[in-house]
Image (cartoon, rainbow, N blue to C red; front, side):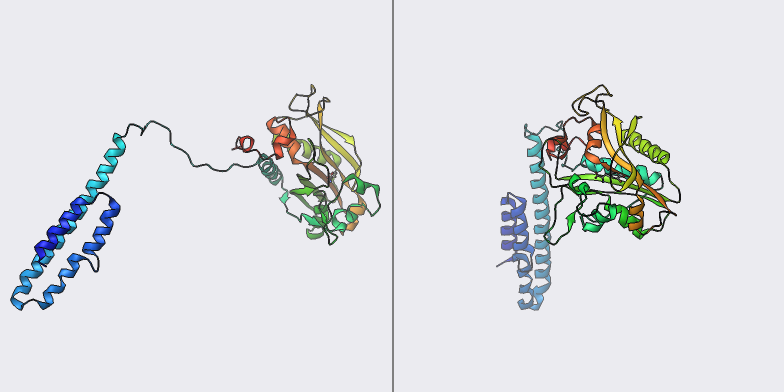
Length: 338
Ligand code: DAH
């Protein structure tokens, strides 16, 4: 077949192509390894020597013409597509774009991170302990022996091999004191689990943050001031707190710390059960038995500790009046915390 015919045929096919995909196929069919134009070069070897020069030239010319026509057709098609898009009245360039959806932090995570930052700034380290604990760390070492009525204060999930889903973050106290040489201060946030019927104010899984300060001498005054700093900073406003005596086997003296309700300003509302105060945390001076279980001599070392639930804090921080919103997992609620 003559070079002219192959070239003319190729140009006709290019002119008839109506899409970029069709052009890509043609490019292979014409200029690819086994393409029609490439095949022409094989004729050179069998041509009489005198014709080889002119034949080669003609083939190169055909190749150049087809390549050029291909590019020209390609840009015509692209421009045509753009022009068609612009001419389409339904395409409104003034509309805002669709932004890709990004995740957002859960408010409990936001409050936890804030608390960690606040404590790091006060020289505390942030520790992480096990969610599955043994009886010793969750109870025994915290001065809650078997058959002690205090075990009924927290309904427990037991695993089939006799371990417990930690009912509080307090077992971290034992682990921290056993692994870090005193004096030290630390907080340890985490999930805790209780075998409770779920209702408006109870979840079987929730979040706490435990604080522990060990030194040769610690004071309730220092504990109170630390608590006030923590709460005021996490709430980003001055909060009023009060301490009441409270019983926890692992502290003596033990206290319940309330803060004035920030939802109603102390006037009384649903969240504070119309008392103006919200139970916020438990705290106290670590019991000598606990220090002993953690390997510290109570004659030599003292400690204060507190444990705080995070969902109540989230409610105060963001003015949420129903705990079910916090753990409900409704995206319309969660997406407000960016
Ligand atoms: N572990 C207790 C609970 O979950 C809270 C608590 C009370 C922690 C007093 C403490 C403390 O460190 O001193 O109910």
